[in-house]
Image (cartoon, rainbow, N blue to C red; front, side, top):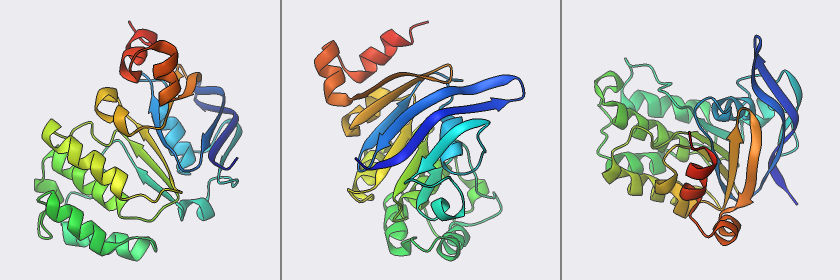
Length: 232
């Protein structure tokens, strides 16, 4: 079985605080996987490790069999949970930047998505609402022909009316042999597009299962199971 992302006894500490502890999990290629857990469970840390933005404290993490680095960054598209684009830039500037920086970036696909979202080439990032900036960043990320997409809260600040379009955009714009790992709190909104779910709790695995088997085993939606598992 081919794995897009493998973690073996993975640890990540920030000083004395453990964000991930002996995490072992395998993400199968060609799946859409929900990475779910409460705040502080280690979701963002895991995605940053996979993107090569952090180094593990211990254990191993591999993207398509390789340690995250220069080679894997060329096949990985990462969407952070906060704005990573300079506020002084315009949409056209960011498009040019992506085209120069990423060989797999499809400018025509990006233009089409941005037009659907009502984002113009001359729009300044600093003048955009938080939701519009998130839409821009997501459109740019999904315009890459990556093998692994890492999306951290892609619909967190987006209005409900735009969520269906954005989820459909995600589905339409990644190839079937690619893998998409999506972290979110809005489980009810994204459950219909997921193949598998991974529950993280206190930096450790709580559950790894296909969405169909979760529903069959518990007789409930993934959202309902999540609320039970992480009930305060």
